[in-house]
Length: 130
Image 1 (cartoon, helix red, strand yellow):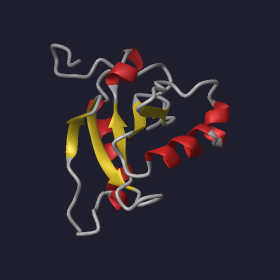
Image 2 (cartoon, rainbow, N blue to C red; image 1 turned 120 degrees about the vertical axis):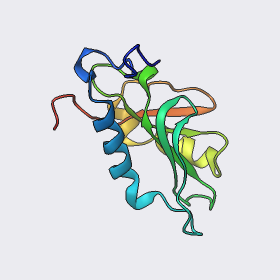
Image 3 (cartoon, rainbow, N blue to C red; image 1 turned 30 degrees about the vertical axis):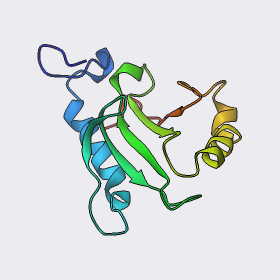
Image 4 (cartoon, rainbow, N blue to C red; image 1 turned 180 degrees about the horizontal axis):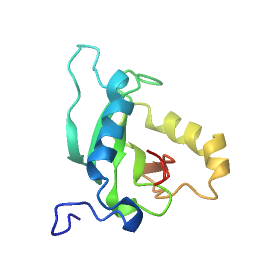
């Protein structure tokens, strides 16, 4: 939730870094932001994110997407940057099995935010990075 100053409540380590985090999301998604038509996918608040972009993967189904962005309600000391795949995407059963059987899932004792309809995956973004 935005604070009085308009910043996201990301904890003390992230105060004043909202614009920097948005730039990280924009740059990381830059090469992946286009639909096959060449149209840029929208960026902004959506699906539990304060600021995110949906990105077309195209596998295992042509309409498989994931979201990448800032999720202040999931922010912890480790990262405010998250990926999300939800059951509305094409190929959800395959994506769900692949992610939960991956090395990432083995590294995480439990995928944070794991639900039957969404996978929330943390993207390491330590606050000390410039």
